Image 1: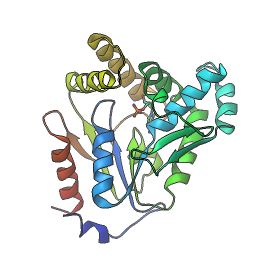
Image 2: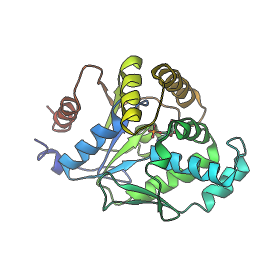
Image 3: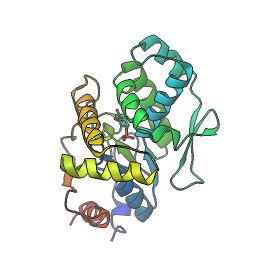
Image 4: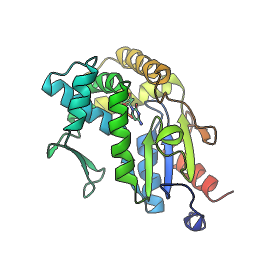
Length: 233
Ligand code: DC
């Protein structure tokens, strides 16, 4: 199905990029990974970069309001993805922190540090560096609007607040976190507000993004819709 798309003429600075933006719990990660696998691209989880900053800040005792402390921290951050693992492991100073960055505490802290301009500048540079050769499905909040405005295809994934909270709750339970369903829903709402209302790179669909509501769709159905869009049908 994606064969004709693979010959699609590429434009812009960094070519061969598909962007998937959306709020927490919209299914971005699962969908992006599956889509990347189907079209032979790599998967770039940009939320993981903000989560790694949050973990490093909490380990080094840097307050999320301390912008100069965060700037210094980002300047010395040793952050990489190990693509030999699926999903790619997140390495902070060589340590696999993939699980440590996905706790409820890091949900909130990553959202807070991601609103800081100095952090965004450093992470956007890192994300572009990683993807400079193209061949990436990049997932986040500002992929289509700010980081890869010239992407070949842009998607914005949404789902109802209740569905997103349920997905996040199940994900945390599967990870062995003991969480309250109502607290998950409340924190998701708080994170939505923080991520959408901030001054820099707020969460919003790019003007040329295809918006997909995944509330009643399976992951496969969403990916199928994307592939059809990319094939021009
Ligand atoms: O996608 P995620 O839940 O792992 O992202 C964690 C936080 O990082 C999210 O609340 C907002 C921030 N983020 C961002 O500001 N820009 C991105 N491109 C990706 C994530």
